Length: 254
View 1 (cartoon, rainbow, N blue to C red):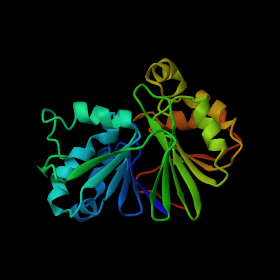
View 2: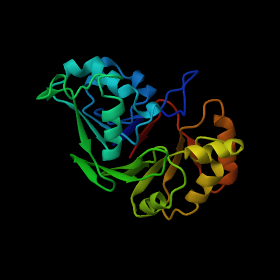
View 3: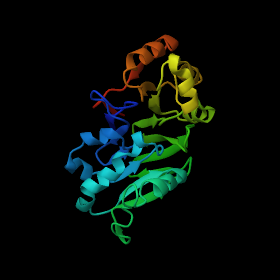
């Protein structure tokens, strides 16, 4: 299996793009501004999207994807997410006010989009790949995703603060090869991190210290302009782990 980093920043500016990962060549994990790196042909080849939560930096590319290539597809694009996340998209995005409802376009019996709710802890199987929703703690309903294939598992935290249930879930994944986890703010902005339910270096260090598994740890969602400061604090707080920042267009295989 392969994950390509299309966007991994906590914001935009100077070549930065928000959260979007391509799994193999037919699946997206969140649809932030990183989606703009794909060609029309690549966009048309996306069959499913897995969302962590409803915030704009993670979903804004979804309506534009459908608008760009919906007519090129032979089947609806399927969006997998928590029921609560899909409810938010239904009420506030695909509502004919902010954006057309592609579940009715071109007709309800032949739509370009369909929602598939995935309750927390449930698994979606796509061939040899399994996508399981894991607990996360953010200011809106949110989940992490475990992606399991023949070579082991990768977990993406989505946006989350420190959360015991997430650490317990990770400790029950013996084949965990890679952990992509957010750290949005440096210590000087700790109060903002707490209010917005994001990690800062100290909180992530505490959580990683409770892990019984030893995945490679990749840091995402760094605040634009503060990346070096956050990573320096992380490396000081976690000297016994090789914690690395994700990079645009990086490829992880497992």
